[in-house]
Image (cartoon, rainbow, N blue to C red):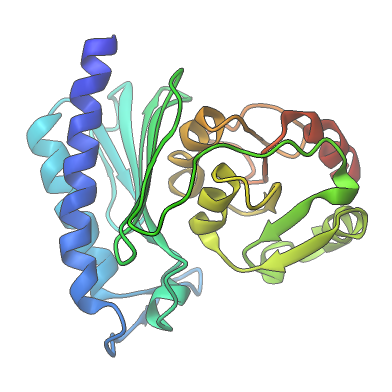
Length: 259
């Protein structure tokens, strides 16, 4: 399995490089955005980046399934499935903010094996492999590893948007009231910052598999935990409620606050 994972990881890294090449020329240009059925925006950069990722993975891993946000599912019967979000944070991308990223994950059934968070503009990249320490590379510096924070009252909390919580906003507010501070925005970039020890908790709702599959190996390889709101492993057919904590000892308090 280890030899296979190294082959699959090389494919994922090549796919992330291909996505970078597509996305960079569009950043901070006037890119028209279409509105999808769920009211989220999509651009030519999203679509072309996913096609570039798919081309690399299909060539290198022809027996694997591929599920992407923009172009759906290929080879649905494959046990090993790549899960892709070419631009996680399209709203940030189209407004010139670098707090977005490309997500490339590999699932073995329900188990995340490989995850990459790639920021194509800043050159930052987080690489997670199940059972291995997360690797971070960046021209901006930074050291991978979550920080010790056993007290929820000292924790920095992040979530992408208040709109994602809907009727569950009171639960989020109950948690936020117990933390030191809470920040909005970030998409996948916030999870990268958690893996670097700058954020302690990320709590979100309504995430699809392509939003979280790549994040799990990154967070866990950096010393953290990712679960659903009940503290159970995330599932492809789950409800999209996600907790990420840098210090695993925070998890119980977060679950209780969200109950």
